[in-house]
Image 1 (cartoon, rainbow, N blue to C red):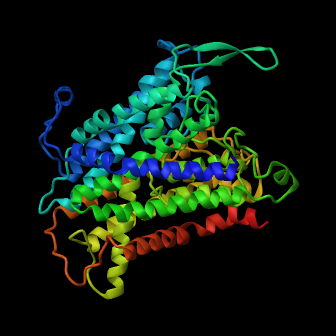
Image 2 (spheres, helix red, strand yellow):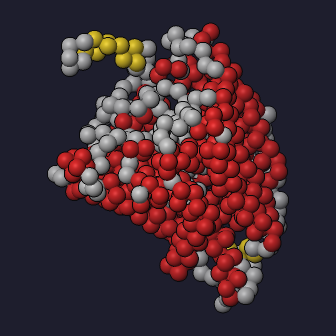
Image 3 (cartoon, helix red, strand yellow):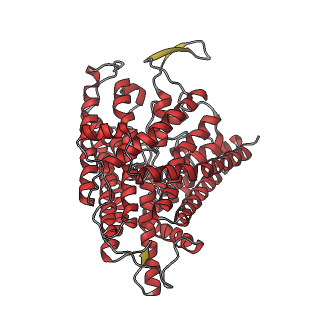
Length: 553
């Protein structure tokens, strides 16, 4: 089977599998977010934390709960990593520098999982399991919880309550992420992913030499990082490593895992607002962007310009021969359109336009389908903007799902949209303006700028993947990228929850002849256009200095 045919087959199988999971998974999540019944294990956890599981919170209280939980997570993870050399199962790893520990603690708490270190060489089993893997669960659950609060803003009327963060966090972790991770960890083990509890084991290379290869609980950590759309990896080579991603099937499964929850969330949205057509419209926009990105990256990576690419049949530099261009491009599009960050090829080695598209995917705000929860609430913010634009065109107050979008609501939406680009552009501009940080760039010119732009785009959008090519394990980069992760994660959440509270207080407005139907193809096209215009106007100058300039050179 040729590479092109194999790529089409994988993509079609992926679409079919996601379509099969859309309804049951989305309905399950909607049920657990709306059910009044608490499981016995959940009640026990509420008692430990001191939470009343039946008491809803106002949006400021919900926000404080999110920030308090995340702050405690950072402190715990920071302490665990700093002390890991004195704890069990450290495997003799060297002690990390303080700035790198700060960056790592922030990274995993914000669901970014950016790594400025080699996973197996810097982390022992205890830090991996009790620290990083736990954050793979709960940081993803935080994103879904904030999404649930925003949806409740649309569904509730004349109230200041948007849910209970501790209940949402517990249910999402215990009823969604944990069961799925157990099932698919077993599937990954069956497909060849390593799952053991040994620090190192001996293997014989093709040349007859014996080498010590690090092992560990790779399969369980791999599956939860994908389900939670987290980056990072047990091995520095990430999903290109044969222990993490040994076969074509495991590669396909990993793509499926990082997409399945974000693509099912629009069904949750449709069910919670009482109109499944609203979910279909949102998932249609997500699907259009995902399909277009995968097709375009595959197209650019299959170009044969140059003798080396002609000999290889495509741009194979930085790609695994086991997967080829099509599967690598599909993985690259999926991982940068979610907040996963796992990679099975080096994006730095992609063609200029192929690599540029991976940056552009993250600049979209990772909304197609985006991170777990963060993708959907980002898309709903853009839907609010699209409805507002449509209202301006016809000269009437815009409405979305029965809620009026006035000045207060649009201020929150505008601040959400402006926050991440400001972090990315200020960070990248500062890095390229400082002589010491320019010295850390291994490439000059447009490609070197693309590497810096990718790093800050990945950090601010909580993606976690890296373009490589720059030395980021320095005091300045660890600090700057850590700040980008913090502000890029929690400032948007402030505006999302504020918008949820503002919407929940309103009295619903009945639909009229002038109400824009937000479940029809017209709205799908309008929303897609608004997304492209917002991103294009914001990031085009930076892209023109990086991947576009390199591609036209």
